[in-house]
Length: 433
View 1 (cartoon, rainbow, N blue to C red):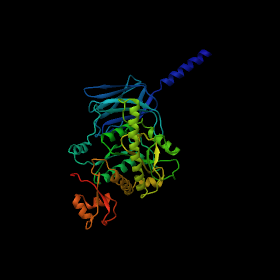
View 2 (spheres, rainbow, N blue to C red):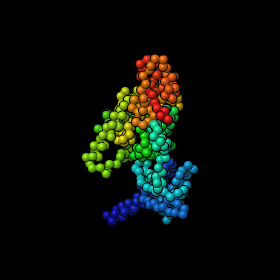
View 3 (cartoon, rainbow, N blue to C red):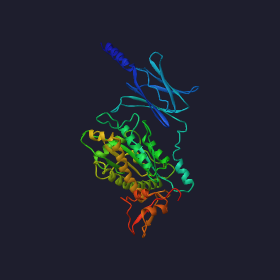
View 4 (cartoon, rainbow, N blue to C red):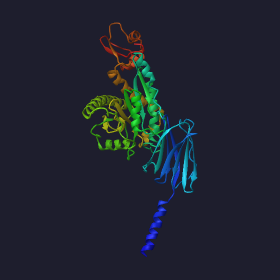
């Protein structure tokens, strides 16, 4: 009897181990410098990758696996992936072929289930040179000519790709809403004299937190702004918040939970200090981070005041939390939770282009105020001071310094053209001075 039971146990164990893993869906996320292919699988799968040439293709062999439907095909804008095809192999196995447009490097890993997805097999494709950013050439050309440059602001739309972020009551994903807000914010900033904004994430694709920080550094950014939409289990919770990095952790349990939620998608980013001894590296990092944090707090406070003009705020003061995306020690960084997407009323507001534009303008008020007072040296906004004399008007002063009257008005937060004798105003530099 014992032998019969043992045989039954061995048979059942073999059946469980031999169960076929199914690939139920394929998702492709094409970024400017990489492509991520995500296979939704019914469970962990044994697999092997190899790169073949003539033509270039990545071959994925999966043990005891099958595909339930035809895979989705990449778009024409994909820089690396031409097509995806599959076929049965050795009766029980599956071979998936990624037809490539060029030579690539790749890495693969498996992910356990989370709130949005089940088991996943992920394949990342990226160029051999990782496609260096070329968009900072404008700043480099200006600097090379010893002319004042624009203040550079990196705008980071949170989440993206298979990381959708929070989900609103109507089914709207945070990643899509914050991308639209970020695009409108870039448009508003780029209309401002002496400022230039760049998008970190330009489309619907995944980007690691470390890579977001590195891109901001490659842009030579003077400020990094991460844009998000908050969420909570209570749909009545509402309002916007602004965060800066906290060295000691979150300032409240809610902020700590939120920081852990955001950080779950990647490791902490930062600057390599491998070539420094421990003491020197610690001092340098502390000095850099202290200066950046002081600037971050000032900027965040001004941005929060601006946001109060377009709606209610969740926290009336700047919050601090351990967001990984804020941990660059050499770039002032803030994170804006624009509203609670889990609140039906605020979700509708986030879907309104007019509201998003108003929000972008409110953020711009805070940025304008900070860089008017603390513009980096060598930038167009590194202002000069002018004391109003008798007979001078805003128009004559603008003509003298070769800037527009509107620029002077906005730069000094003037409601009209009226100025008084003895009053001091700031004069932004033009590109030729």
